[in-house]
Length: 287
Image (cartoon, rainbow, N blue to C red; front, side, top):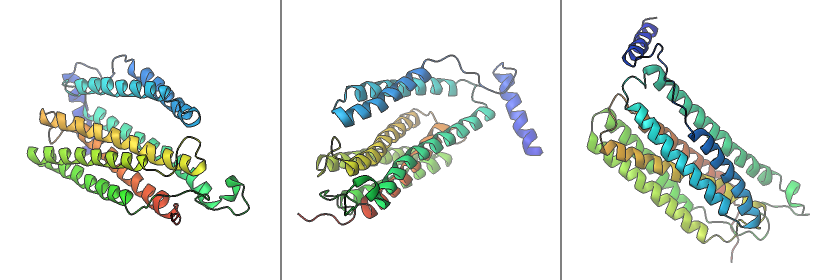
């Protein structure tokens, strides 16, 4: 009861200081939700066009709209967070619930890819239509999981440690540790993306017209790579905010959200590495 009373008094205080009659933040009308939805739709349709017709124009348009939405919407949220009284304790709790539900939706997004993978991996005769079904399909040369994929696994695991280091440094008031932890995390994220690009450039199979295995592989690992790029951008913005003194030990939800997202990216990669690269790749073909 005392905790509830304390939270209620904090919320009431925030409501009074902001001139509102209730503790919630009623945001101003914004165009970014509809623009973001349009960009996401174009991006998804563009992936289909790229897969079937090798046309990347719609992917580019959707990507630009999504990037614009992220930039402008984050700008508005940062302005709101620096306005006294808007981000009350109740609002900050709602933001945490929102980020949690967003990550849960991302989990289900990747569940779809894993579902497709395990369907083909466990029951290849249902989709390959051959008398001797196998996974990977005959003629597919798979990657060696213990070269670039293993190195990328170590990089992401290390980046999870450096993000946690940055978070704890902020809580303890160590600004230098905060900046170093975030900076190293961003560099590790960029290194991961670079190595994945190198891996794709040397792929022995192709997305367009390559069949079932390339489709599952590139969609699952490619969307994860996109999430790594988004997470790296997220952490880079947090570094800039930390450099400008935008976080305090008691109010730093932006950094917390970035850390949660990055740990989610780490976990998804561990599943991709174990199942897609190691177990699902079978025995690599010998040249």
